[in-house]
Image (cartoon, rainbow, N blue to C red):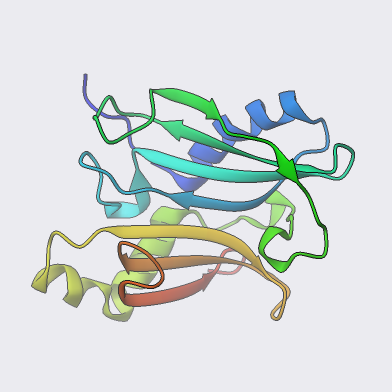
Length: 167
């Protein structure tokens, strides 16, 4: 079976339904792609997306992973819930956001990043994975896509931040 590749917003819709089953007031604080054998993050799409949700009512956070692949290095296909953890609203890394701010999807973020140096990196090293992380930036008070050329933030050839509301 061919892998399903989704943009961040499309995968989020799947994950959000599951999170609302866990907590009616669940709000996302991070959405990120996870590169694997089937998907290197091209065109803003991935075969695996993970989202973290926070609930004030439950005072908890819970991650969910959507997988569209049967690859051995991937979670089983569909939506998989993670383990609930305690929620601290003052923790900057779990600042929940309103999904209404997400006007620019990961495919558009990829196009913008390509124009700002990404294309050169992929020409030189076509195997470079591209990772997408969507989270609230407290300093700029805005929702940001981080397009990362490499396996992680710490191991990146290039990192580009794109405002997810204005593009």
